Image 1 (tube, rainbow, N blue to C red):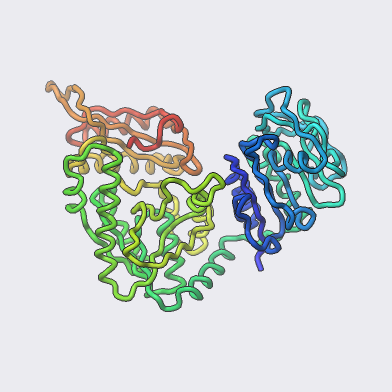
Image 2 (tube, rainbow, N blue to C red):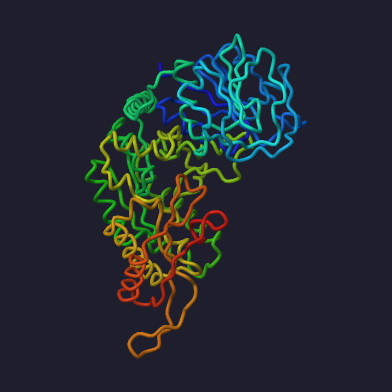
Length: 509
């Protein structure tokens, strides 16, 4: 039986980060809302309470039922969790005299405490709260302080319970990973048995037991998630998996053919469907970004549904849903208004009457790549940049036409191939080109031109929620501009987007 950690979510923006840090220690963990915890907490080896945007003193403050956890399982309470334990266990929480937000340094560490083993005085931590623990809870023992926060960390005598007012999960807490390691491995004695190989073994076994010889269809996109999901399913059920790869006419240059060849080389049962004309016809005359997305999504559903009917006896639909999508849908703040059901669909209709299998639903993106590597997927495919479901449809501003798609495919190919040849591709999280709905004056030879402008975009990110533009070398950008203008008919101007997210988004539509 695999060891696992329960993370109770109180609505903190950092809750996912806690899970990622725990997983980095090769320990399996699950996030559950504080108001809907698992029925059987005995299955877990330790519990972490997250932070929260609420004050423990407010009427709206989350009130978890810890009766099956506290004193029975090792417990680490972070920020709100630490204040909650203090406030309702004989201590006192008061508004802070100074704003306790940002970097701070530990000015005192209690010696001989396993929790702080390997952490030195002066170590940087990250604070994010407006309240502070004025008095420790009953049997509370002070473990660490900063200059402004006396009760920065404590433990409760007679229990394996710890509280900290800073965030160990964020990058700015220098020894945050060490603290989590001390708590989970040295104190709670949780086994580090969450590895890609163990996940593959467990998942393949579960799929076989659940699906047997029933047939499954999967919509491939060429991306990492759907590819890893397909290979896992193929390992489990072999020929009972039918993959469908739809060309919406908005893919990268030659991508439909090259991806199909790649999949067939992997031994997958893949059917390619070229629906370019159908998509472009449906998009004719439309300029509104949201309406374009809906048209692309609805057309995909129709094409996918038609093709799925050609495979007899299908009972299951497989999707490459990953853990951030799941977390979003079960958040303590309630389900998202739009829950991602399929990266290329935006939700399949009920009339398809298929059961759902999601082999990656407990993995983060970086874990998906590690699993992919462990099952022998080509590193080039695993390292591919994310590509939006609507494809170039949201990178062509305004109306989409076959000529505009051709133009942008050529520009994109030059940019992406350029990044690879300059060894810049792996330094970028996502890159692409946008075709702008404006013409600009130029001169070629002695002739005046009035042609399109394209914007190049390259960003660094971990999950796409935030992103910074990449400072690409000027010499590279100069070469890309010259090559695009010289080789792509209809383009006479190239610009580089240096906006970060937020306030801008990664895509332009």
